[in-house]
Amino acid sequence: MLYALLCYNDEDVVFSWTKEQDDAVMARLDVVHERLRKAGKMGPSLRLLPTTAATTLRKSDPPLVIDGPFAETKEQLLGFYVIDCKDLDEALEVARQLGEANPGGSYEIRPIRLFLPGVFADAEALETSA
Amino acid sequence: MTDLAWINGAIAAARPQAVGALLRYFRDLDTAEEAFQDACLRALKNWPKNGPPRDPAAWLIMVGRNAALDGVRRQARMTALPSEEALSDLDDAEARTVEQIDGSDYRDDVLRLLFICCHPDLPATQQIALALRIVSGLSVRQIARAFLVSEAAMEQRITRAKARIAQAGTSFETPGPIERAERVAAVAAMVYLVFNEGYSVGGPKAPLAEEAIRLGRLLLRLFQTEPEIMGLLALMLLQHARTSARFAEDGSIILLDDQDRALWDGKLIAEGLALIDKAMRHRRPGVYQVQAAIAALHARAETPAETDWGQIDRLYATLERLQPSPVVTLNRAVAVSKVEGPEAALAIIEPLAGRLSGYFHFHGLKGALLLELGRNAEARVAFDRAIALANTPAEAAHIRQHLDRLAADHAPAEAAPAR
Image (cartoon, rainbow over all chains, first blue to last red; front, side, top):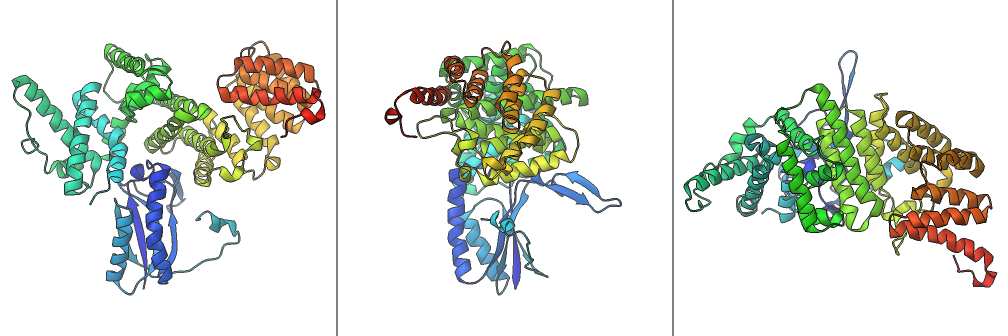
């Protein structure tokens, strides 16, 4: 079963990390990522820019464009993983391992109902994730 | 199991909100600061043991407030220091405070703090020092180092700023909409000064640029729909993205055209471009947005040859209208030199000679344009003038390269240094 692992944390904290702290967290996470990759459980994953870069379109009539994230929360959605796990226990174990590598905040584990891998005309769009 | 780095990050991130709230309670900067310090010490002891609180800022506010109140009582009674256990309300500090602090309080507290630091009675140097001390939480020593002054001198600057604020009878009420707009502009200007202080020199001052970006993010969180604040943050991010490409190993400046663009920070550029994109949608241009748009055109060019100088020329013309200044015209001349050639650019800067006679960059650009036109003798005069006006060793070193090249042109070919 595919699960989305939604990463929530205080963006003020995450974006106040120095480059060294950020690199250290990413290095610890990469160990877990690599393990998941080898086990064939790692789908796409991404990290989002801060909510100050967000724009929200409210689907009212006419649609309304608002600067900022959909909801103002103490912890913000900062990224997500798509992982393939046999059940919730296994997904929770993955979340635990990621959490040890990157303390603070929460992971929300949401089973995925529909997953379309998608097609990009511009191959460079994929490079931003690197 | 709480990572020390995480604790430090959480404390740093909570600081503006916590100090802002404590200032609302105590109406005195020193008391608020001490209360916050006290709360931080307790957090360092308590969090590794009990795990991080759900809301670090709320925890720090409640514990800081109680510690300060206990301190006041203690002083009044001259009794011994209370033990950690005796300190009232420590245990469920968080649960109660979380309910008390809502979004609008947070906004007002942080805003009040920024406004006080940018009080109109304070000169810019004091505003900056105070903001870095109170809002960013840099130590007096760190700030002194960044401004290349002694610790004692910086301590005095901050003390004077606080005294002047106390004297001015600062209002702790949240200002109304008009005053708010004016003072937001003052805060933005202060933030950009901090950034430039760090950006222009690098080295020991480099952390100032990062601190300014952090303040910019904070300001944008408070004013999510303000295009000029988006522009300010975009401008800082796009400029800061070039940091690792801007200085050679010997400390000399590497000009934009000669920078290794692979060293530019793609993440910062992506964020900057996203913000300027958002800002432009509002169709309310301002000086930060226009400068950010110029920086964005540089960031989008994969090689110097791909730079859209025509568009940059038009943006500088807009900037001249919004903020007429000989320095802006000087910058437009650079764009004109790329589009129309050095002669046209020289014609633009010639009338500025009077007003910019003491400005390093004026003589530097004039020299470069003259050099391009083959007027070497005049170029040397301009470069000599520039070197005398250089603000930093890096600037002087850059001009010296031109002078060396001019000298080499006269020397026998085999004596010319390899480049």
